[in-house]
Length: 381
Image (cartoon, rainbow, N blue to C red; front, side, top):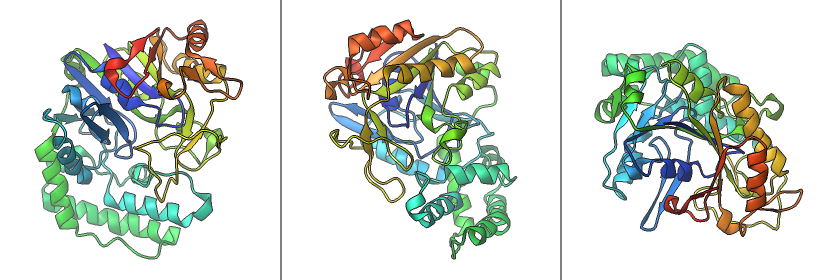
C-alpha cells in the first residue's frame, strides 16, 4: 500500500501520530518529501516521546526513512537527532535517500534567521531552519546534493562550499543588510557532512524496486495545505514547498506506481504557529509540548475551523485537482479527547458522528479518530 499523510491546515495537525499508526505492523518505509529539518512531528508512547525532524515518525515501529529528491536534509544536524533517538529507543535507524537531494547548509539557516529577525513585526512565519533559503540558493545554481557529497572528496566539498559562500552568500548578506558574515570553517564543515552521509545514509538509484520491497510506503508530509507554496493568496505567510498530494503522486508516477490512499490530518480545533492571518479564540487554551514559543514563530495560537465544509472541502479539492486516478481519501482527526468528541468550528461545534457523516457524504471514504496521543488507540469510522 502507498499512503500519503498530508496536513490539512497550517501544520501541527498530528501527522506524526498518523504515520506512527500506519506503520504499526509490517515492513514499512516512510518517505520524507518536502521541507527538511524544520518538521517537528511528535510520537507519544506511554513510556517515551520523541519529536522527529529528519527521521521518519514510524521509527518507533522500525520503519525505514527515505529522503526523496524533493526533501532538503540537513546533514549537520542529523547525528544529533539520531543520538537523541537512541536514548529513548533501541530500534535501528536506517536512512536511504535519493542522490539528487539538495542539502540545507548552515549558511541557509543563518540567512533565514537573520532575515526573519530584520523583518521585526512583519515576520513571514519562518521556522528559522533555512529551508526557504536553501530552495532559493539551489534554484540560483548553487546547489550541493547528496550525490555530490558522496562522490567528492572532503577537500573538493570544502572548495564548493567556499565558492557558495563567496559568490552567493556574501551577496545575499549585503543585499539583506545583515551586516556580518557567518564565520565558518569550511574544511571542518565539509568533513562533518561527508562523515554524516557515509555513516548514516545509503543512496538509492532504483526507486521503483526499492519502494516495492516494502509492505507499505508512507509519504510523510511537512506543514499543511494552507502553507503550500501554490497558495499565492496567502503569500508571504507560506512555505516554499508543495505540502499537498503533488509530490507523492509525482514521485510514484515516475516509477510507474500509484498512490492508494491520501490521509488528511486535522486537529479537532485549529492552530497556527507562526506569523500570518489567523482568527484566534482567547477562550481556547491547550497545552502543546512540541510547539514552544521561539524567536521566529512566536507562540502557538488556537482557534476554531471556519466550517466543516471548508475543512473537508479543502482535502477533497486537493486530491481531485492533483491526482488523475481514483484513490481512497480519508481524514485523520486528532485531539478529540480535548474537545469532547466534537469538531470546533465558527459555524458551531459538531459532534464527531455528524462530522463523519458530512465527510463521507462530501467525498471522503473513511475517518481515523484519535481520542488520545497514542496510535494504538486510533479507531476508524
